[in-house]
Image 1 (tube, rainbow, N blue to C red):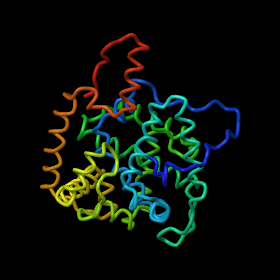
Image 2: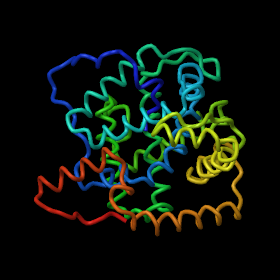
Image 3: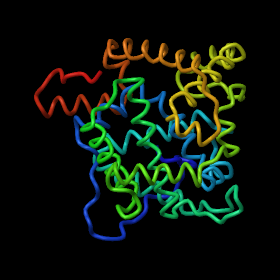
Image 4: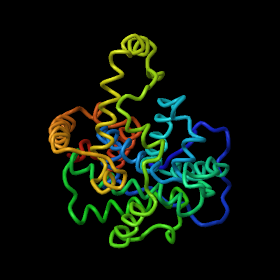
Length: 309
């Protein structure tokens, strides 16, 4: 869930600086293997992105360098592909991590508090990645099921592994959940704020252009219907963005969340939990995940792995 300014950059991947072996993606059958490719993960991403840009430096970098306003659909597609590569990309995962570091090398400026920032400063770069864990942990109980203690630890260990793919050193990330909690709450208390980008992402009246991806006939239909479709879709995105944030994040950002909104969120997520697992694989999983699952079945000689609900 790393914030990327523009994933179609012509820059080549960064050259290897040492002879250490590349970090490998999280294991097949792990928590992330089941989570990241499931279409329900798409509902979590806006909350994670919003928590990332709540950091003054990250918010300033995205505000200045990202194309999320002018090319939201393209940026989303490229960022999602990058995320999928971290988990399902095999040898491509480490190459993608190096490419992202190249993209971030020139991103610097002054944050919302007047401090100089650089996107690859260890504390800032690590925070962008760290935000994925609390959002996934929280949203999982709504969209999938509550994680057991063992699954929480597995998820955190796998997220650390993804961090290594992105070039984050172990010394810059808490190495256990017990170490993560105080770090996370300190960041919420001392750094996080409702930056201008946060306010844009949770604005239910934000203006979003019609999709420019997919079959041309579908694009034409969506463009014609967009004045009608856009307001409820944007409002729904804003609702889920705030609703799937951990409560402590909402408190840190000063966002209201009522009992009625919580009931509405739970009703929606109950429908999602019942509906998505019943879908055929071609509809339930994103394309890269489907290919990875198919390859894993072939290698294991198994026709139907146990589904993750």
